[in-house]
Figure 1: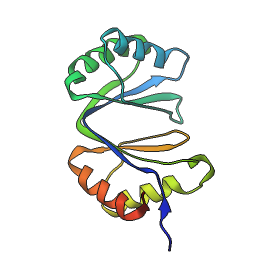
Figure 2: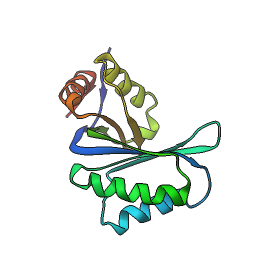
Figure 3: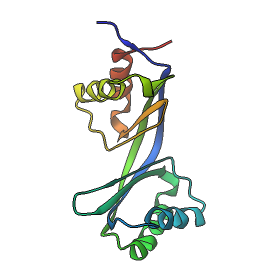
Figure 4: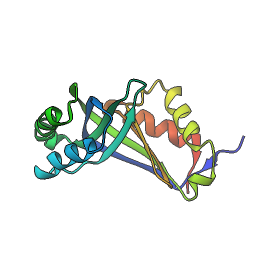
Length: 157
């Protein structure tokens, strides 16, 4: 079977994942959280949100490890305003991404990435996509294994 061709693999280390869990799904939740982080000068490297069956939102974001204390403090401040249940930090984490042209027109790219990671027993802690990129947050100590599995699964230039 031919390997799917991608543009390459990107990685980012030295990150912390912060989960802002169980906030009621309503307008302004993400804005309040991001404003609290922005007011502290904290740049967010990754963000994803989901809404569960009970109508609660869960936001996962990643920041530099050097910003984790300030990010947790900002999230805790926002927690009261947005009525979230918990702020849960995890560190260290890394982001591994594949990129290439026309991903939106190539079904199965994400599945291939997730299968490659699963084949090495690598747990995905967060997923974000764009038109040309699929990114996964993983435990930082598994990054080398993740990159090796992706190199084996995809053809690169």
